[in-house]
Image 1: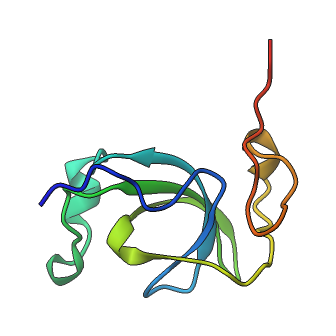
Image 2: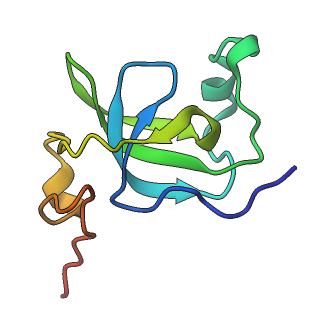
Length: 108
């Protein structure tokens, strides 16, 4: 079944259901839009279906900061109230406020 509406919004803090990381949504693909090589690298028993939203996250764990690409089925909302410390956040968003990051729009 194809789900066309994203559950999570830009600037929302989310966490992975299975892996110990969390991040801020900075882009959403209505369905899988990465490479076949990336998809095939996921163990078959863990591969998410492609016909769902996939999220680009400014992610962090205890060791590092990175960009993650995660299916909607593998995310849950983060209600910790704690900000994410990813160094690229100021390029996309304003200051952390009430559990989310407001989109930073630069006018030319």
